[in-house]
Length: 279
Image 1 (cartoon, rainbow, N blue to C red):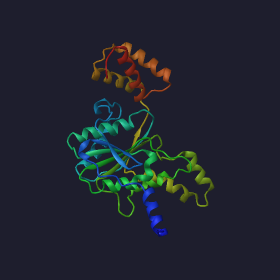
Image 2: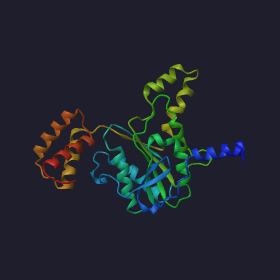
Image 3: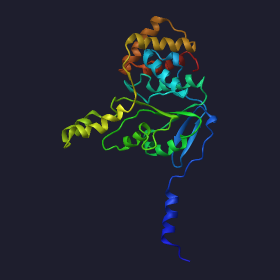
Image 4: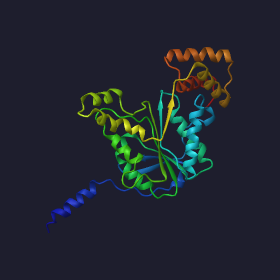
């Protein structure tokens, strides 16, 4: 018996449509990673993080994000946050450290990592999280958009929520090396070639404006760089004289051509390895 063409079309659409994920057990882990094909939240039992007290030189930023996260965990009003600035200065580290700190008192707070390339699926993720008893920080690391990249439109679903609004139990924390998320030459090109330059630029630049908190990270000075390393040494029991540490750490930064929290940790990792200390 020949099947109706509409039935065949309906079956085909059902096969290619993303399968709705089962509701996960949010009590299974403090953090999750959003995966697609098929949609699912994979639990992360242990998050790779640095202790909050070891994040040196960003005290004000750290306390601002900690206060905002605590408010959110308590069910109080809180803002989406964009952490932008210099590479290797702890943008993603402070999000993970603050999240872990607040989770000590609020187990219902969960962190969900959302990869930039999976932004088009964010509507399905929000549908899964909406109505859950837990509260969720969506964490999108190294967020930026290139020429002709339309993923930024999906991001607005998280920040604005469309007609349904963003779920009350969801907030977004993102990191980026760019304050406006778009390349400067892309913005300038829009400004120079569009019929109405101000309107052409507005849609792209205003994306950052949808974050209530802008937290800037700037390159550290030499004293802060050395203080980071000394803090790691004290925390992990690595013994080294101040003069030796200073000479080696400055030489290390010179070979890297940069000075940042990431470079400080890389030097400390080498130092701990030479001393046989396990991290």
